[in-house]
Length: 111
Ligand code: 5GP
Image (cartoon, rainbow, N blue to C red):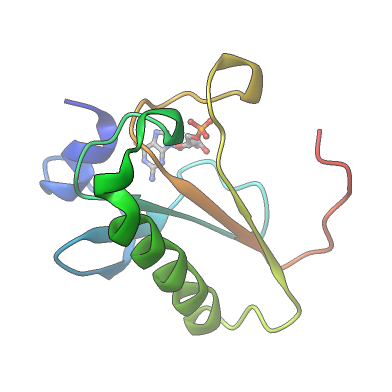
């Protein structure tokens, strides 16, 4: 069971900002910006690489809820949605998650 499954199951605490039947969104424990939220599917898909056609609606739902969370947090100046896939991207938790990062100016290209 990954740390994110434990958060979904309320086995470890997290600051959950949004939840429905399919997804949960909570504040990152090590924020990289004034707003840093992780939105995850409740279905334990390890990473975007292994998502399938079956996950099409779920992936769309995640993106739509990500922008709703950004709006709820008042990120009117913009925000970034990031998916880290695999070791070169720095993926640390093998449970698909979108980072929603905002509240400051972002650099480009990302590091
Ligand atoms: P990744 O590097 O896999 O894309 O991102 C994993 C993210 O999960 C990191 O930003 C890290 O700070 C966050 N994280 C790791 N453990 C916990 C935890 O126990 N609680 C919360 N809220 N975030 C966590």
